[in-house]
Structures are given as structure tokens and as C-alpha cells.
Length: 137
Length: 210
Image 1: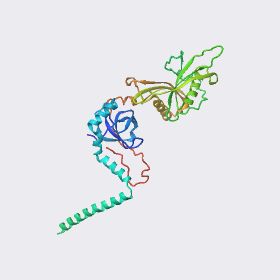
Image 2: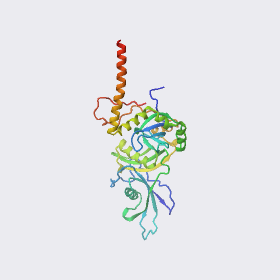
Image 3: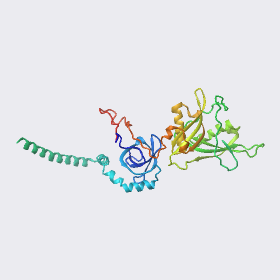
Image 4: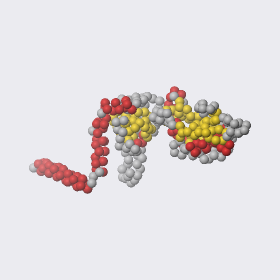
């Protein structure tokens, strides 16, 4: 196993970082040249199109696809591997979701967050102080 | 440019290559108007000489032109018409100028382009290969590539022939390397495009994403 674990290859699930389909997942079907790939995401709302590799972030998921795969085959493989659910369970997706929610916060949400943080830190601090006291005696 | 009998549509063969150092068609370049703006489009332009007493039904000539819009396409048609036939815009007419759309824009294809261009010290023929999804995109790529590699401006480039070729006929290694059904390559050293987000920072950017 080398340094690189994720490759641009037919069947590789990729995340589109910016452009019209920003934030969506797609599957790499074939490489056009060293800068562009043919991509398809029937289950994630990405039409079959050419995409620049600069916009792509490779994920750890890979489907079993030939470089000549049709959209129908991609859809079948995607559903069989349940990529949408698996993606939402990854830390990456969770962090993206958290960022989105943080950006949508209004003042009341921020107040609630402050209170929640205080409550959590209070619990941690009391427990920590208890342990320190126990350690000293 | 090919002569067409009535409605027979035969693919345009283009325009003779320049012979070694002697240019059969003197490059009196009066048309510096061609600028390969944006993405080029493929047009099929058909034109003919106006009917005269001597020749009441003139022959139709068809060309496959790559231009940014139909105005430039027609202009380019006259440019070539002038040089190959004795037809000028003032004594001719364009019968049709249609935009041609690619039949399979979602299929990756290999294109061979034969062209002729003026360098600073002469005019040369070239054969180039590109991998793309549509003909227009491949020709646009060609113009950009010629500008980059040979400093050739679009007005000094003449596309002689564009052909979609099967993988077995490709000659250029930079195209052949993608003819691999199990192609696989990583994305090493990902240079950040967001140079200004943040513009000033104390940390070096991360380039390893696996």
C-alpha cells in the first residue's frame, strides 16, 4: 500500500467542491485527460458531464464500474452500495453539515449554543475538580 | 472545400497543404479578424458564385468552419473561398450557414487535427491529436495549444481537417496514455487555488489529501 490511497479511476466516488454542483457527490466514469474527467451522479443530481479535476475531491468510496458505464449502471451500483447513506455517516459529511448549520445560525441559536457550551463545560469542570481533589487526598 | 451537386452532402476535404518552403497560396494575410473567442462552434457554410450569363447555375461549395459565431464563420468562409476559388464576397452568396452540434457530446473521443500555420519565419503543416468530448471543444483546445506552444495567433492558423479517430490510430503518446480501460492515477501535491482565502496566514497550506 503506497502513500496514495484514493485514485482517479472508473467508479471512484468524488465530491464536487465548487461550481454549479458544489457539495454534491458524483462518480468518475473515465478520464478525458490529465485535467478533466467524465463524471456522473444520477442519485445525487449531477448530470453526466465533463468536470475539471481541480473541482474534485476524491472520497474513499469506489463502485465497480467499467470506463464505459452508462448512467443506468451507475445508478444501480450506487443504490446497491448505498453510497448516499454511507457518505452521510462519514466524518467529512458530518463536518460539512455542521458548517452549514453554523452558518445558518441566528442570534437565538447562538445564545442557545453559548448556554449549551456553558452547561457542558460546567459538567466537565466539576468532574475534573472532583478527580483532582481525589488525587490530592 | 468541396463542390456539392445539388443536395449531396459530402464531407469537406479542405484545402491543400503548403508545399515545403514554397507556399502555393501566398499568405497575404489581410484577415486579422479571426479571434478564437470563448468556445468555438462548428458551422457548415455553403456558398456559391452569384449566377451570371455565362454560368446561370453556379456550383455550390461547402466548408466545415470552426468559429466563435456565425458572423465570423461566414467571414472565414469567404476568406477560404477567395484563396481557393475565384469567388469574392461581393460576387458570391452564402446559401446556408448552419451550426452543427456534436452527435455524442457525452462520449470521450480522440480527434486528429491537420492544420497549417504561419510561424515567425515560415509556414508549416502540423498534425495534432486531442482528447475531448466534442469536435468544437477539441478545435478550441487546438487553438489554445498552438497559441501556448508556438505563439501562433488564431488568424495565422488554418484548420485543414478534423477527424475523429479510433484509439488504435492515435499516434501521440499524450493521448495514447489515456487508452487504458483500467486507468488509475492519484492526485498528488494538490496546489491550492484559494490563494486569498486567507490572503495572509501563518500556516503553510496542506497539499496532501488522501
